[in-house]
Length: 199
Image 1 (cartoon, rainbow, N blue to C red):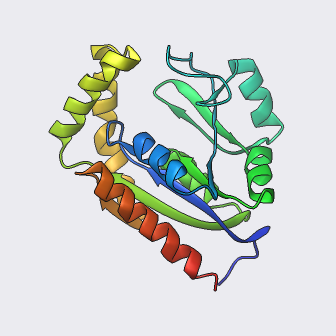
Image 2: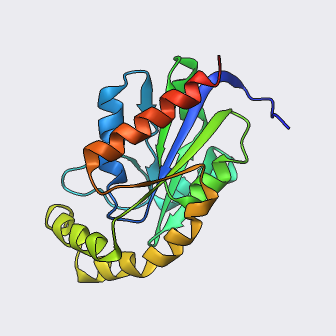
């Protein structure tokens, strides 16, 4: 049964993966390639890293402010990830759609499940998988030099790996990210295919 959505002919593109799979890098490549897609910027209660800019990478807010937004039902989705809250503003998503853009989400399976319950626009879900668990560990170790994550952060993300992988089959598409350029091209092809379905 087809759902009635608020924004016809627009896509909500959800990309999820375990930490260290490369989804954030791929999302950036998609945004650079296709100027008709805008990335949804999440609100978070975690502290910004040295290389992050408020309003660009995330909206960094206090726990009290985040809780007020939950009460006000301001979020289309929110989740606790590694002890910090992340949420997507319903108003911001609708603002992007109103500007005649599709919306790209770099979120986990918890957020994806909540967005699937919305009736804002057509939704396509893509799950990226790494070549192996060992590759994820290597990527997280390499990334820690840039993010400042310590051994405890890496261990916590590795412990969550199996739980995240369990949810892969809940997505419309599963793509192996062995080569970032090849993986990005596959995601772009999926987006273009889903758009053609409007016609």
